[in-house]
Length: 303
Image 1: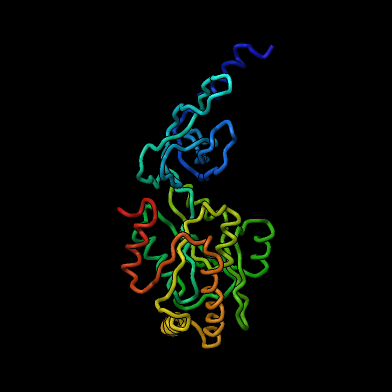
Image 2: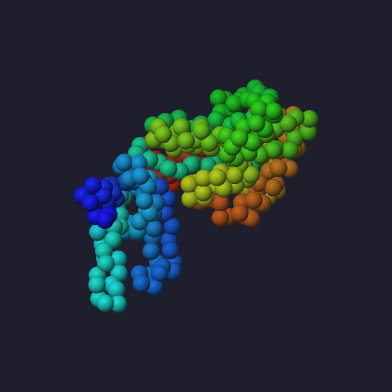
């Protein structure tokens, strides 16, 4: 017999564990649920409970978001053909204000062509919101340059390959350039360390790095901003990028030409892969842009 007191007690304990509050890790909408559950779409969330366990359950919040605090609630699931009313556990929002210190659960990605201001915006944002965000170091095989900040970790091509093979690098790209190997990547351990601090990791990406992060962590784990230079036409945008690249004085003319070629592909990527971007913004005035971005990022509007 399997109805002994210890087994029954363990079963009841497992059921009680499901009735703990938790945090939304990710969520999705099921447009066509099983017939017995009715025809209305259902929002299903992956919830990390207070004890660290993760469960899948319906969400009752009208506008859920990653990092939202929720609590369990018994609600009517469906009625059987015999008329029996079946209840199940669903989760409702404790608050509609994100609590970033508890579990941010996503990556803030800043994408765009060279010269658009990704690194500058990342530094300003993480400095202004230091209690909530942290920059993820970029692993690169290129040589250090004047004007580099602390965002880079320099390594050899051989070591880069080793980390890629072992899975330590979760997203990588090669930036075409004459006369120099330019490889860039992000290590999963660096991102996860920031999550453990209760902060949002901020990454600077281009199209391949963004796709790699979305593939590894899942698209819903990325809050993505596409950054554009001002200008109504592609030519005007590229002209702005050329001016900025020359003004910062870090590149040779040959490298600048390489970066402009890559920039054309990056600009086309915004149109070709709209699904990878949550917001497209124009970097014309840094102060105004930072203020606007803070309003679009859960938990940062009051920071």
